[in-house]
Length: 80
Image (cartoon, rainbow, N blue to C red; front, top):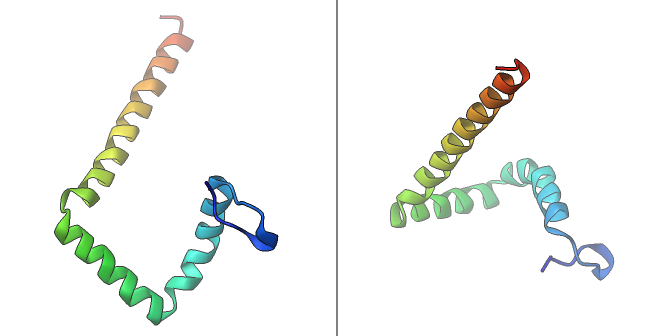
């Protein structure tokens, strides 16, 4: 279920992500967008304090798993 892009065609999730990454910095320069968006994020953080920590925890988990996998590959490559 993607959003409609130009011409009414459906955008894939990947296309929507790429569009968001491209447009977000410019959109956040607009005070009319930035202030309400940051206020919404702050309210969400107060109402659900674990949400931002959970994202940070996920990043730490993935970094740890990548380090373990890289170590295993290195170990296997060394023929040990």
